[in-house]
Image 1 (cartoon, rainbow, N blue to C red):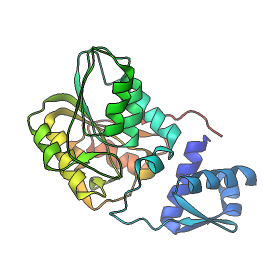
Image 2 (image 1 turned 90 degrees about the vertical axis):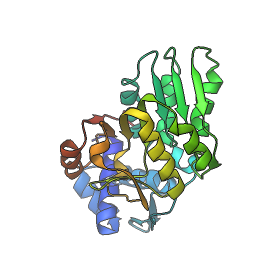
Image 3 (image 1 turned 120 degrees about the horizontal axis):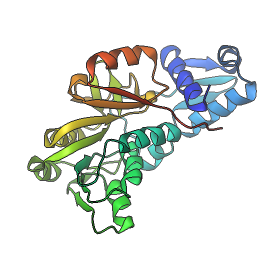
Image 4 (image 1 turned 180 degrees about the vertical axis):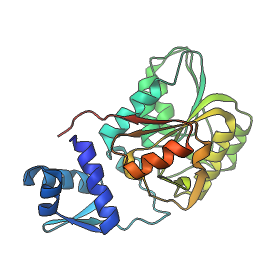
Length: 260
């Protein structure tokens, strides 16, 4: 079993029961004590769990809690990289695309810098910076104005006014949580800006790693059936796969590379 899959299973167990013990995980996962402790250390460093003597407990996350961009960028890196590689396959030269705020869309941006004649609309300062640093003259980047959120997204009336007249081929939308009810965010202002992004696009591609399953932010951005494509990693639980296979246009599961 790959490390991202183990860690996803550990997170699922903690979300369900509130806590796990190292000894139980060793037996259930069939790996060494050292491997389990390394997984718990990785999850704790990302702020996803709290380590305690002999195991770990859940971190109390509310529906309006919004970690900063730097904190989120170190979480689930292998899964986000796999998702970004898969998402890049939906982009061809000459397209107009939109990328929302988020660390997964930021990872995707790094896979798109070599594609010719792109027009990129974004409300993400880090995403715009990725394209700016390449200096390609055949790529046009439109950064909305707006008020900056903890995740370095620009939101509010200025951002929405820019997006109301935009028309793009595909929107790549990063989200805080995914569930049977839809895709959510902890930031009310960002939800309105993301809805404006959705209205601007002919195709909606949602990007979310498997740890976001059953995480629910305060505001729903879109229903499951509004997504043409959902790209997740292979750590997505079977229950979630059934939901999304039924309700989204297409579910793509990307395989993370082995990490230690």
